[in-house]
Amino acid sequence: MREIAVFSGSAHPELAREVCARLGVPLLPTRVSRFANDCLEVQLAANCRERDVFLIQPLVRPVQENLVELLLMLDAARGASAARTTVVLPHYAYARSDKKDAPRISIGGRLIADLMVTAGASRVLALTLHSPQVHGFFSVPVDHLHALRELAAHFRGQDLSNAVVVSPDLGNAKEAAAFARLLGVPVAAGAKQRFSDDRVTISSVIGEVAGRDVIVLDDEIAKGSTVVELLGKLRELKAGSVRVACTHGLFSQGALGRLSAEPDVLEIVCTNTVPIPEGERTDKLRVLSIAPALAEAMRRIHNGESVSALFDR
Image (cartoon, rainbow, N blue to C red; front, side, top):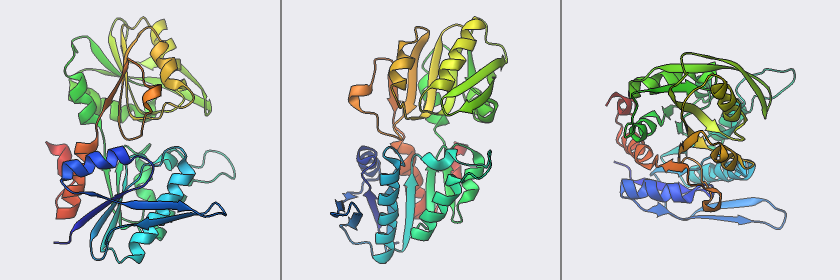
């Protein structure tokens, strides 16, 4: 069988090192340099010839820099005669650009997928894409993982006798329902309308939340405007305590501090798909590792085993 070779870009080397430790393989060196004209150059500093190459790079801030770095890594692996190159994409930032909801706008999720394939991606291992249709933007095989089991394992250690899972909007209601089934609790969803990137309204919550301990589930939290709006509606409906959970904790523009300052929020839970600087963390934040799931999926891809079977256990 071909040897495995794992490289990381600059976006989240800590996660890559944890994944490699789980796999029992070394994280191979990558050299990134910048020319005087501000162009990047990437060198994969280990043999790739006829090897099964995995490139770990979430598209996180600075997204455009990390994207170009990933594209150059793909080109380098192809030029080095890699047998197969898999992009491990813990967070796909452009997945939010998934539809044409205004005249003359780009659909970035599809365009960036095309760029990755053109640069040399043989397949993609992604985690919690923003919407199901993004999977279809790629013209190569995509293994799409989710973090519901990791999040559920965390909450099972708490008293869930009076709990309810609440999705901030109907678009995430299917995932919230699956999460609620894992916990054995009911589900509710907010009726959300978005007017801009940071302006949303939630007119009502569909489901019973009065007096209940709420677990808010979303795929990602960036500015946190949706969660803050939902918290206001939950207070109107006289909900009890609130815990917030998401896969991708982006927490931009002070969102983590704002959410932590909310008195009825007891806990904020996310995974380590994106790096969260130590200086921005609060006492209410809990970060779960997704490295075991990524490592097991990579092992199965390398060995030609079923990845979907991960969700049957």
